[in-house]
Image (cartoon, rainbow, N blue to C red; front, side, top):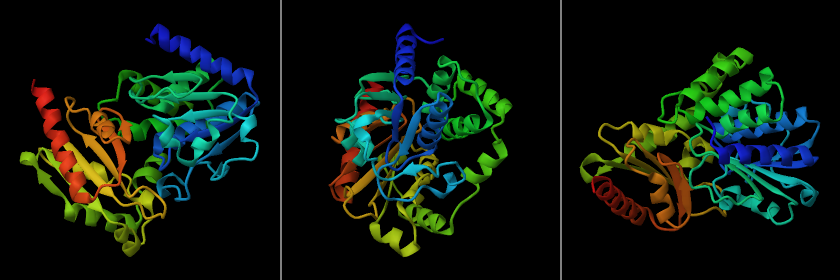
Length: 336
């Protein structure tokens, strides 16, 4: 059951969508399935309302190959010239920095709508709908569709299913709630093609991605009695195996699966020039460890309790030292 605050916020977002005609849909850099599924579902939702909307993604990195089956042909990589005339509708973005170059659209936008499920969301919108216990941002978009009185279509259902199945780790993560499972059934009943999504997302793996995974696994080290697992990828690794930055998506989950690991970290140097020196992905297999707190302690990060990340200009050994210190502090707090 929704809280009174969530119900009020849901109504406020629905009113904002009804009362404006032009929108710029945006999600975070290096998008995952929830980001892409949510932005596509929001586009289809606004189309059904008869609104004019465009989808935008910051950066030049290609989309992960596993999501190229989705109807994202209209996804722009540059901000439209009429950005000042469009409501900025941000999806799955915990804070402004996650918008990348899209931050330039915040100031001129007449209204900023922020829909997300990260518990540490900075509520940067003029209208905010942040549901921390939602399995995915896609789940919140489904609630918006209902609030707006729109019917699900097979295309909309499949976009939402991509968001849901990827952010719950194929319904295996701790955020797999009864509501998420009921939503999955509804989306399949509406026409989401489960087999097509599974084959495209989980059984379409480029050889270069496997080679990148091999390098990360070969470098993996355990610390603090095996509770912390860390690996890294260099800029040269991407070039040598012929991999783009999105190919590193999902590697962290192999590190999290190491026996005895409570915290897994993957440090990577983005191959694109002009990007932060290093990005760090964090995953926790323990309910007691809030990795988003570790990401925030870095000064440039955030995320979920069990999945977060940050950027850093530090050298890899220094990042490892920081992670070891933070892990020990987190364990001490958990035991207190």
